[in-house]
Length: 110
Length: 113
Image 1 (cartoon, rainbow over the protein chains, first blue to last red):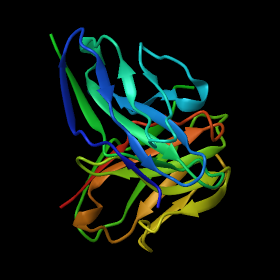
Image 2 (image 1 turned 60 degrees about the horizontal axis):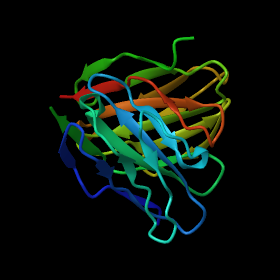
Image 3 (image 1 turned 30 degrees about the horizontal axis):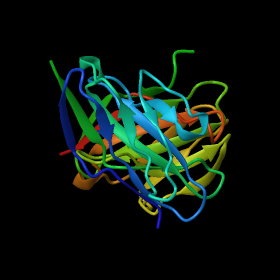
Image 4 (image 1 turned 45 degrees about the vertical axis):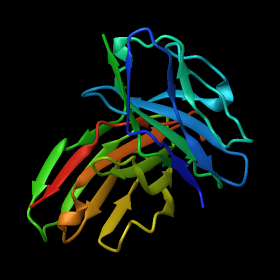
């Protein structure tokens, strides 16, 4: 079964501290993985995709097939990073259907 | 083009009534998706259109749910005989292709009383 697990519902850090939002997936093929973010009172938006290997707003995420993980990292958290973060998996077929994790709320304290 | 638009933003309805939501995707996006999100959960897939063809439906989509995208542009999602369990945020998203991720709308929040 295809599944995405985000084990932490809430992650609270101080400004300037490193951040790691955990994401584990279950999928037998070659997954495509994404991180989406939802800031307060805004719509859900794409943060980054594993295939592009990009860094967006200082965030990076590396696909680790051995550990079936796609953790989101940032070396120095900023208050404006406070938001809900969702990890998502695009699995089999050509539909581009996404399977989302339950989300992690990141709270960055001043 | 201001992105993906959804209408209405909020809908309160009595149990047993029918409701219809509309989604206007980004014009050059031929892929359109509907998701449902309940409190504390991530979005759950409901259905997918490529142009006007509905190519996949989730088992979550009971017979009371129907979606259309008649001309490959806007889409509607209708729920007949609403139940309290249908209360949720209904999200629409569009994309140009599989690899580039979605653009989401703001959602329609349905409350069934």
